[in-house]
Amino acid sequence: LVTIPVTAANNVNNRFNHNLYFATTPVWKWNNTARITLAAWQTASAQDAASLFSDPKFTTTTGSVPDLHLRLDSPAVDAGDLAFIPVAGETDIDGGKRVTGPRVDIGADELGPIDAWRVKSFGTSATLPEVAGDLANPARDGIPNLVKYALSLDPTLSSPSDLPALVP
Image (cartoon, rainbow, N blue to C red):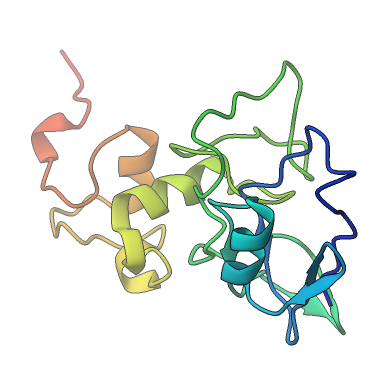
């Protein structure tokens, strides 16, 4: 149950946006009227235009309590506000950088830098170990992903000539 107890009369300068909602039976209330879809809530409240209603795909759940860490295929990844700029010292729930990809992730967790790189580099294949795993070699050039990440190389392109070389 998602209940947001606000009305047009008492909602002064409050803004809801870039949220990820998920519930088995969602209900938003606006002006004492229940809305059972995100679209109905958005229309009635003029809020949450860029918000989503989807399974957040947390990595693990203990009982009914999620741990808030995002899977690589979570719809929350890179779905936050484009204009978001973290304040100095702002971190995610693990004390990590608040933005590691092109956009902030929705929620308390931000993917770690290597996972943000996997999502950027492999898109929907980022969850496949044979493509995006540390030792995978999708370019078939003998250079594993972990080395390409460390050297800022594109893992989908053959790049033996871009490896550092010893100079005698």
